[in-house]
Amino acid sequence: MRTTSQLRSLWSPACSVPLTTLTLHSGARISVAKAAGEAFRAIDAVMQAADYAPRSADTGAFCCRKITGGSGYSLHAYGIAADYNWNSNPFRSDGRLVTDMPSRMVDAIVGIRTKGGQPVFRWGGAFTSVKDAMHFEVVASRTELQRGIDWSTVRMTKPDPKKPKTWPVLQLNDTGPTVQRLQKRLAKLGFDPGTIDGHFGADTRRAVREFQKSRALDVDGTVGLQTWTALLTDQPPTPDEKSPVKRDRRPDADPGKLPILERGDEGRFVERVQQALNRHGFDPGAIDGSFGEDTERAVLAFQKKQRLDRDGVVGERTWKALLANPKPT
Ligand SMILES: [Zn+2]
Image (cartoon, rainbow, N blue to C red):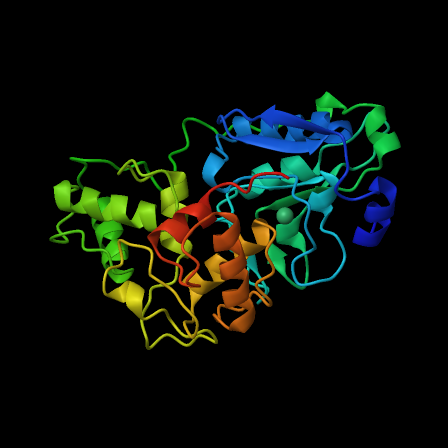
């Protein structure tokens, strides 16, 4: 398999690549190298077959920036990498994989071949040191891709409709033990679902919506696959849990809202801010969940560029700008 530096030289120069913009099946748009357009359409065909929808708020591809945690250019700067749904597929420097991508779908994407039989993609969730679950990158050369994608290798086995899903879609007025399980989970994560009685009422829906909003999911009050995955992989903000990263303090007071963050704060929301800064092309230093000098400097630079109040504090407006798609420059 080619290394990142081999891919850099195959696709050089960085940041000045002819681009094409693809509209994905979900309506989200990404810009990628023209030569890799067909390859990324093949990913989208697999995602569509898997019923996996990239969100426009946290999906993107071309970005002229350096690699996360390194000094060379990211493959995003060559238009040969794309990040899908980064809020539910976070970059983790601790090597822990957090993803809502079904493994069958990932396997199918990694199985895509060119007409010459060359592998086309690898997945960041399979990296050994860090986990970058949002990330797919091209491993083929321009010349290999010129031969075209072998569309017979772009396939996704449909799930058996007779086989019940482990986690059913839940919505208002549903009842039963799975609803109760949902309510317990919401309560554990700090969202008040009302009485834990197995009835999906207005209180439970409000808690679901607050949870979805806090995790940048589609806010529809319905618990589908992505919300279930986020609920089940999220860590509750309990202080007794052993963790190298201190839990956020403020979100506990009002868990439905994104916390206001500033220098000295720590936790997974800080990590999210750092990831977002990186994505927008600002260097927050190490993505370690610790809001230090480097992160503050990056926030200030980001606020300046976005014409926000330059106070170095991540409040509602800065959060909103951070969670939006970076504009390709
Ligand atoms: Zn990426």
